[in-house]
Length: 132
Image (spheres, one colour):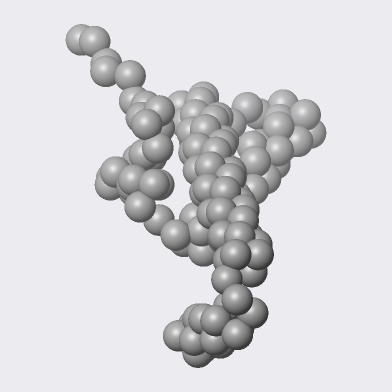
């Protein structure tokens, strides 16, 4: 019987979590941060369990269940890969935001330079009101 390799990340901006495929590109930065914290907390718990098992083995000489130990190590690795995928997406979204901010700044600078001051200030006030 051959086992199909499980891939925690598809490599295309998606991860598999709790039986579902999550497309990271559709999540907001806040949702990505929340998912990042959730996964990091889970990974901390896994690492703590592995550390306790290692300490217990050193003290008692009784090893942890090998199947459990391998599953815990695999879970730690999967969480690590998923954390990296989320961090890559956060970085990509951050770069896109920086580009958008540079575009807005360049547009405002050009508008300030080329429009008469009264028209520029009127447009700026109208934009502020639409955002508020």
